[in-house]
Image (tube, rainbow, N blue to C red; front, side, top):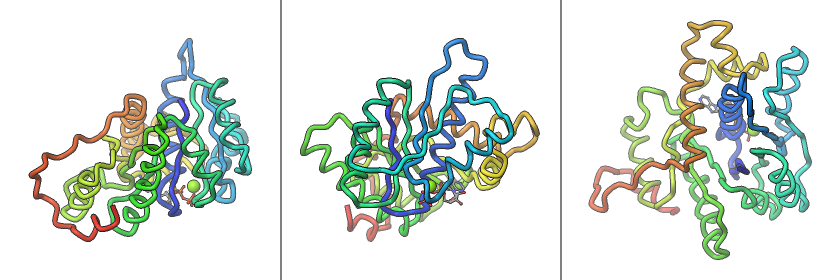
Length: 254
Ligand SMILES: Nc1ncnc2c1ncn2[C@@H]1O[C@H](COP(=O)(O)OP(=O)(O)OP(=O)(O)O)[C@@H](O)[C@H]1O
Ligand SMILES: [Mg+2]
């Protein structure tokens, strides 16, 4: 499976989403007789997030769990590279830079699944929904097999879809008929800070400290989220007569 992380807006949670997925796969791979091979591509290396995480693992001598990280400069050749790596690895996951450049869009579309994270705030959702609308239009026009999915990121675990504004925004995204992956990547602030700083996956952090609630929650979400990606498990569309959303300005761009 090839997965691309795409957003024209920065800081929405692309690298964090990849780290969650990789955590879920690494955890399943450990001790497995048939581990799934993964190639993570950091094509947004100016941020250094993913490459930095894997460098930290190497420095600490932590096992690779069949997961490899490559750093590339994205170019017109990137879609072809993705195709080739897709033949070689079970999963290829690419972190793309937040640019409108053709090669970035084409690289995103080379994937089986394009993930577009956003916290349920208008400032993040509005640019992301515009990018998703364009992406879905290209997919339709060219009858591409690519699937797309909104990733709800940075939702507090409890609120999930309950906060009034967040829920309204979420409804408006649904009404625009944008697919939303079912499991939100809840508030992972502490767990992520620990992971980035130490090069440990969440499941390894839990072993170091079984009471680290933030890592436990982040790990549980990650496992469910990865399952959603594999099965394309998306939030069901609301009934046509659903009147719950009052956030009308959020629908304007869709
Ligand atoms: N689910 C989450 N819970 C809490 N914090 C999060 C979550 N997802 C992302 N963040 C935080 O938001 C910030 C941006 O996340 P991240 O670096 O993953 O975004 P990005 O889209 O890769 O950004 P960039 O465009 O800079 O590469 C980070 O500080 C990260 O810790
Ligand atoms: Mg990033």
